[in-house]
Length: 179
View 1: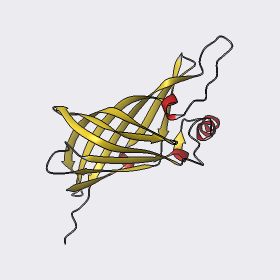
View 2 (view 1 turned 30 degrees about the horizontal axis):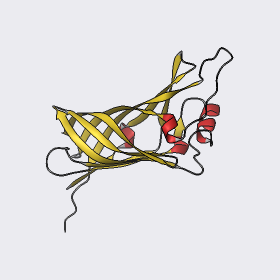
View 3 (view 1 turned 90 degrees about the vertical axis):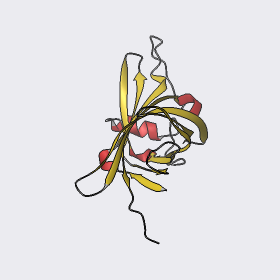
View 4 (view 1 turned 90 degrees about the horizontal axis):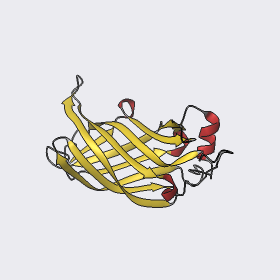
């Protein structure tokens, strides 16, 4: 069994949501961690866990970030982490995988399926084995009790329901421990 840890300096966790129907706001979680536990050479069937600190949300606007951390959205004080635990990681051909698991935001856990592309596995100049993955998916924020909304005078919704998730993740294999 190989254990791989997310390398936060070479990874990013991003989300995009429509604003006023006419544009998209992009945000990041700046503090996160996760592991991949795999058997053998490949990653099929790997157990994947991930969590992000809600307080690390960054949309390049401090007022908006404060609002997102409030009870209108994530309620970072009561629910400080967003968590994911895989239930399935299946190869769908070549370097493509389907990742299914339970995503917990606030006090709601729902099954989600994400598309994953394995970018490759290499040994870096320092002798560490690293693997890269690009992960994409979409969730409906209202299913996770992120329900705040407003409507403009013209009738446009301020925040869209669908949130696009995009993650570029590099993992580092732990050195096996001698018994």
